[in-house]
Length: 195
Image (cartoon, rainbow, N blue to C red; front, side, top):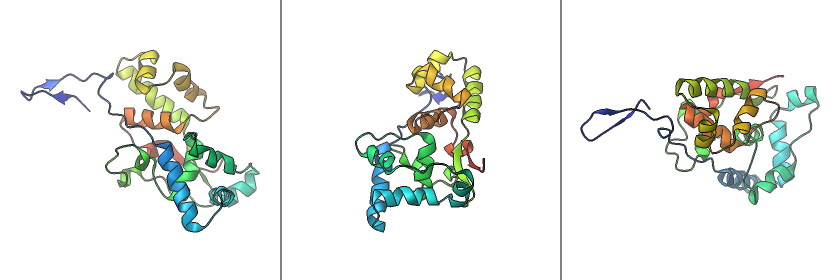
């Protein structure tokens, strides 16, 4: 947003600390959508976990990774949290985009939000280093300190600096706050990984 307009149609200077409208990511709605699809297909939670994993069957055979645990999914009923990487498994299985789970989102089906198509030889992954670099560039352009940005994103400076090292995934809630602050679709930071 370049700036708001006042009642006299004069541009009001943008304030990077207040201009972004950031909607919360609804982890419970994601869990509910998984549960509804599970019931519709007559699956156990283990069946859902297996279904999520089988979407990348060829890649999994090559990598010998450990599959997603059903408890990762069922725990969301009481603590609706998911890492951004785990959420991509769920979104792919549901054929939904991340923006469709933002509280109050109006157009979650906008084609700009579509995640990249992926076959069984790949897995969707967040490019956390790209997300960090893009965030850092905008932070510098807006003249924000890391502390100011962390306050805006409702996290700690360590949480956002951790994206630069990208050793561990961040929570889906924070990833979605960042992309909204950037004014970009989450899909801009998701790619089909082969490793």
